[in-house]
Image (cartoon, rainbow, N blue to C red; front, side, top):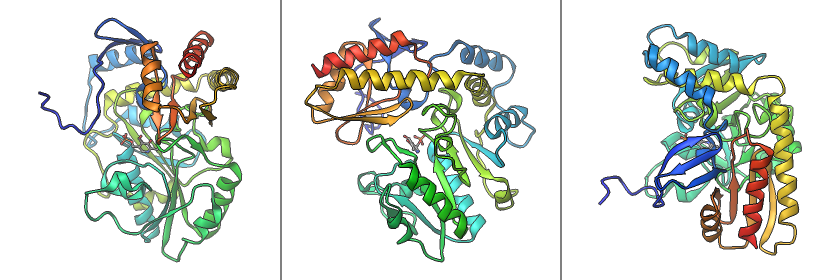
Length: 376
Ligand SMILES: Cc1ncc(COP(=O)(O)O)c(C=O)c1O
């Protein structure tokens, strides 16, 4: 009998080794990983990340945030580039969003935050309160007040919820967990302009869409906007727990000494992995190939699944793709796994693909042929 809380549904498979885009289970079976550990190992099990971790373990793997941390400074520089942000490091997506909620409230002196129906922002009380899905919140009693939920891609529904007390609007640019639903560019641009004109902070949750996942380093770069606050985690350190909140530098006054913190946040091991991962993604031409190859994946999928009755739509951005189906989702995922392809689900009827963004054309062909077979 397992001594673990049964809050996860675990399959009877254990992955014990990994290399590049492949996982190997305890029986020696090899799988092409189109989940990246739920959008985490965006570079796959990359040799340079492994080397950086081994090097850092040989030096020192943790120091508290009471001392200088040049690795945090380095990763902040890499993340911020030419943007006007400051960085706070934590350990997960939900923590990054907690930081964002705290910063937005403190910086504006207001409490109301508008989030979206079907959003997902995490499992701690603040992030769970921001999440627009009742099933996530059931049984936990009172949540954080002052959250309201607009309809995704519906600008008027946001305007209707704005009051004098609105501190921020918080959104994912592709709603990941609820079905891989991209935001419409016109909606995002209108929203960003409206928020800027009214002094409402725009928080973009890039926990899943960030770190090259959609073909740009940040998904907001597809939309021609610059959010006031950005949250990151998942792919940030390519598998070592890490999260970050970036906030416009003028907000820094609200996150002054003693206002927020984290024991592990920006840990040396996490920062060593983040630094090398970002450096790989920022190499000249890297993201061009991600864009090119992810377009090939989408086109090949559309071609391969064109005549499949149970495929409703194939959608997404870059390497964040969803195949909406009327088929039996659990069976389809199981069939794919039997054939050596690990995929995810999203919402009630979507196969979610979050492969490593380093996929080769051969890996794309292999995955497409397996997905075609399972729909056959
Ligand atoms: C958009 C988004 N925000 C926040 C989270 C929560 O991240 P974590 O599980 O690291 O707390 C997730 C996780 O799936 C996510 O997809």
